[in-house]
Image (cartoon, rainbow, N blue to C red; front, side, top):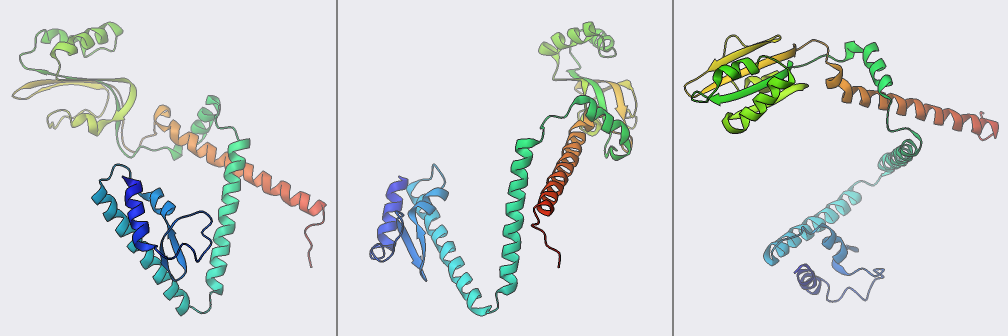
Amino acid sequence: MRITVLLLISLFFCSSCADKHDHKGHTPLVEVDGNFLYKEDLQAVLPEGLSQDDSLLFAEHYIRNWAEEVLLYNKAQSNIPDNGAIEKLVENYRKALIIHTYQQELIEQKLMKEIPEEELVKYYEEHKDLFKLDRPLMKGLFIKVPLTAPQLNNVRKWYKTESQDAVDHLEKYSFQNAVKYDYFYDKWVSADDVFDLIPASENRINQKGHVELKDSAFYYFLNVSDYRRAGEEEPYEFAMPKVRDMLINLKQVAFMKTVKDDLYRQAVKRKKIINY
């Protein structure tokens, strides 16, 4: 399908241009002021799975946009006679891009990707002031059951304890009776996300504890085993990805400073740096 569309476009736009230029094996589709759009360029951006009509429509829009960009660029060039400032910007960008690419390759090859756990913990402990919560978090367990569910007295007993036996009972019970069951004793979750699961209450928990609520159809049981308010220190488990990113960035900066220092010392030693 795609090949048919491209051949049709090629025949329509380029019946006489192929023998006038060296296209280095590419198939020209359109020429605008000596600039060529090739079949291979269009083929690379043409989405998969389009119908013939949609492919033709996409190709027409792409070719039109390409031609307009070429024309606008040529018009801009003819109206900006002094391109010195632009050439300087281009050269600076090219230099920055090459340096960045080289730095990333060096970092990828030379710098350890994994940071030991003890180093992460040490950095967290020494910089706790950097890790403050912008929203409350909690650990715990939540279960929602219909008012007509069986063994509600057992549920009231099981959800209030973190013992493995109680958790096992609740998990088995939830398979047949719970509308929703969430176990998060082992991870920090957004308190707001949990509160969205229960009816509005003026007595929302903001500390360890348990709550039982009901509406016209369901009971809601929530046990909060741990709670952190907004503004308090982030728990280490929650902060760890941020800690790792910070340490990696610091190591990259230090590594590149070492690389630059070594390059400078070698240049001085070889008398490549001349001060006038």
